[in-house]
Image (cartoon, rainbow, N blue to C red):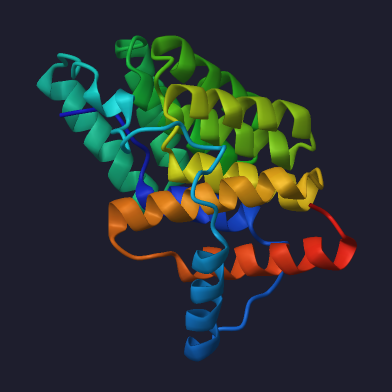
Length: 233
């Protein structure tokens, strides 16, 4: 059993909250298809946000799995179930006990940070994410969650630094490219870089999932239109 990733549903919630102020996109199927076609036609042959070569696997998932006791595995599973059920206080108690038993594991610290975010305790969340990274600097999700926390706190430069650190660990992280694009699009106004990261996220989505992200296609077209209107290259 790996202690590798937070619950995917929770990541979706955090990602959606980061996107809350992005331009509203039409949900008409024909419009979405047209946007995807336009976005694909405008994609450069080489994206400067991506390294050359094939798409790689998350290095955190390739690292040797830690050897843990059956009790720790059971407690981790219990905490995940509590998080799925949004029983945040119960999950906090379970995870706090777990990180005392196994402080060297990155995954429980990451999930504890997510729980602290849900309990509106950003200081505690930041400390937990830091511990997750200290336990395993390859934990890309910890960088992403800490960056999202810094963005919500208005620390945009620190958030960008963390997303860039995540991409230094794993250049093919869709979440890191997508959220860095959101940060640069909406919060820092670096539209050319935002476009590169949106397009990188779309390319990686197509390569790994076999189809483009229709919402992301809409963002790409919207940003390109805003850039054209403002004369931004």
